[in-house]
Length: 408
Figure 1 (cartoon, rainbow, N blue to C red):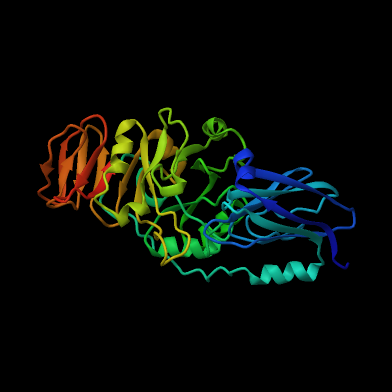
Figure 2: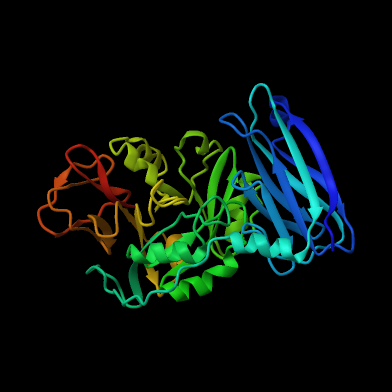
């Protein structure tokens, strides 16, 4: 089959267009003869211009790559990561264009949709990064001597990461191998506005000896939130006030992401959020910044978790920086978060503070200060110190007021 152009559109976008409606749908019709589609979006990119790309078919949402890709392929056997493989159904499809940033002078978009042959699909498939070979991983448990009850164990992990299924650079297997090599027991893979990576998680987790938690980062310009659990897609175009209910009604958990983070900050109402990414890897850039702790203390019943938000190793946080600890029944990581059994530390082997019944336990925290809102600072003397618990947050800080660990 030769290529057939189904749509060509040259469209200028101005700031007023973005203000009126950020996500635009552009329709095109697909004939019965099509076996694979290619969508290409071109524009003069720059600091003031970012256009996002997504796709919807006659039967519903296909996927999203945001500003990470300018081209996508969809076919029955394979699709560009971020999109769900599926037969190319005849009928009306929609290219989703996100006007993420539009400079004052505007930006001119060129959008092309064409049918392509199987050879072009295979060429794109071969260009994607391959998974690394699996390396036998010894059983490291118990990693640290942490108190736990019958059937429960403390697991170390990370609740925020990205692969090639959105704007990361590693395959699912590559990310799993990296996280396992850093001593993590679990990793939530939370690609933006897609669940296309979910199908790859079980096998990659088995191969590399790590629990990979299905996740998705529901992403809008007014805030990002991770949905944790295999709950199907929570559409980013739905009203943000419904995201938590959608997740919870399907057995998942919603967490507000990096509530204080440049143009990715949470700009939506906060009505007592149940879970929040209190500790984001960006905190390491200014470790004395007290705002993340202060934000958490405004809603002290919020369950705290942490996330590296890893995209490209060497350019942002690595898996486990910070590390979130969950007291899980078996490998039920999402259930532990829902129950509020969490703690966060700067690293997998750094100082840690957890709750054990009616006591707070500080581990490997010699010389640090244990405190909480309105509490005196108590110097930790020893590698394993127990004190009577109080209700509400607690954390370990040093004499420079840098937080090393926290728990709710």
